[in-house]
Image: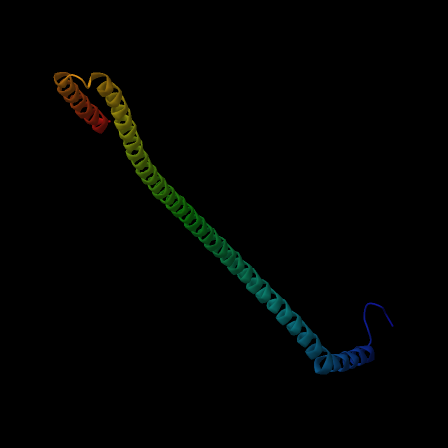
Length: 171
């Protein structure tokens, strides 16, 4: 037997064994291999599809996050604007109340000043009248003897009282 040229019997047995092994592999081995390759391909395709879906969801989440941030900023600016308007309204209200209160106090003070002025004028008139009567009484006691002097004196006092009343009314 030579190593380069095999015998006919060896070729037959090798062909028969190859056929049996091929038949067993074709019947049970190749379907299992192709099934596992197909399953693995399906699993890889599913993983790629899920990765793409996850990437898409992440993009959507990022967009939603940006939208929420924008909405939050808008809400924040709206709240700040409303707070500023409220603050300004409160300040204006406080100013108006202070102005009204000042006007009331000023009106009350003017009324009190007017009343005090009237009271002071009455007191001055009363004192002037009392002084005038006192002075007139003293003068009249000295000059009761002469009638012309009495008339002249009375006229002078009347003129003085009239001018004093006019001056008091001006003030």
